[in-house]
Every structure is written in C-alpha cells, then in structure tokens.
Length: 237
Image (cartoon, rainbow, N blue to C red):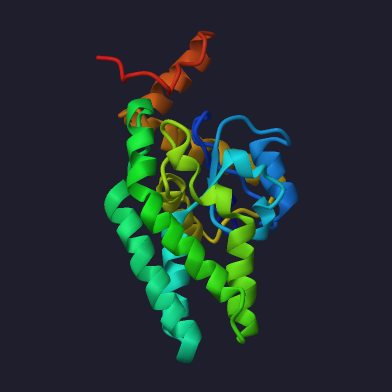
C-alpha cells in the first residue's frame, strides 16, 4: 500500500500483520517488497497489478472484486469479446453469491470447494475459449488469468482468506482522502511521520480504540518514561 503526494494507492493486505501504510514515489515491485518483505508470511490479497507478480501464487489471492470489474469492462465490448465478458461476469457473480465476503472456516472449505466446482469449471472453460479469440486484447487478458489461475481460489484452500482485498481498500480510504485534502508530504521525514500516524490510526479503528485516546496515552507514556501502550488490544475501561 502506498499513499502520498503524486503517489498511487495500492491494495495489498497480508492476513498476519496489523495495518501498515507506506509512502513511496511509485507503486513498484520494490515498493511492494519493502512493505511486505522479500519473503512475506501469510496470504497476500492483491489486484492483478504487475508490482505483485513476484509473489508466490500459493500465498496470493487475487481480488475477485477487481476481476469482476474487469469482466464487466470486457462485457461492454462489441462482438465476441463482449459476449465472452457477459458470460464471465455472470459466472463470477454466481461465485460471489456462493462465497459472500467471508473466508471459509476449516470445516467449511471442502463444502465451499464442492459448491464452487461447477462455476469454477465454467469460468476456466470460458477463459480457455478466450485464448482462442481473434481479438488480441481478449487473448492476452484470458491467457494472463489462466497463468494466475491458482491465485483466484486460494480462499477455498486456506482458512480465513477472503476473496477480495476490500480490507486493504478500506484501510487506505482515510489516507487517500487525507492526501487529497492536504496535498501530501514534501520530505522523507514527513513520509515516515505520516506513515506511522495513519498506520496507528487504522490499527486503532480496527481494534475499537479512539485514536485521540490512544495518542493521549502514548504522549503521557513518553512524558513519564513508561512503555508505549499497545493499539492492538481492547481499549481500556
């Protein structure tokens, strides 16, 4: 995730780490590796942006919400590509109806895979049909998705993995609005400060803690030489 002046906002999230926002001049593979680590742990939910192509497909889940929008865009085209897009859009819509927005628990994954099997096969058949299209753009699109095929369905193999990166998109929303209103940062020192402030704010939000209360306790701890309070636990009563 990256946010800042003239920066682009990405949408990657790991299931094993608290929210962490990073400001970088560009949304690149190097920026993603700096944020996630060269050997990231857990499962990373991303869009199809090339900056994430270095990730192992076995620990990557492609955001199906982004993919649905791609199918819808394809459906607006004329002729055979549009017809293919409409069929893919309908099939992925069925998959969403089955999965919802949750990751399956261990006992549910087998049933989830069984329920999705027919629609998965239909989507794969449609993509394979697309690779034989006369339209070059449709061929590239469908061929690329088949290369990423395992990462479309990681949420059916691993507990707690969701089929979209909506968690990351929600975590970025406040930061993106802040950037637009403030015109972003001007220095590396400002980058680091804003990264930390926004990351702490999002961590507080996810843990039901008012950021103002947390920062007050943090300042008090600093002034009295006490350890910094955690933003990961429940708010104190």
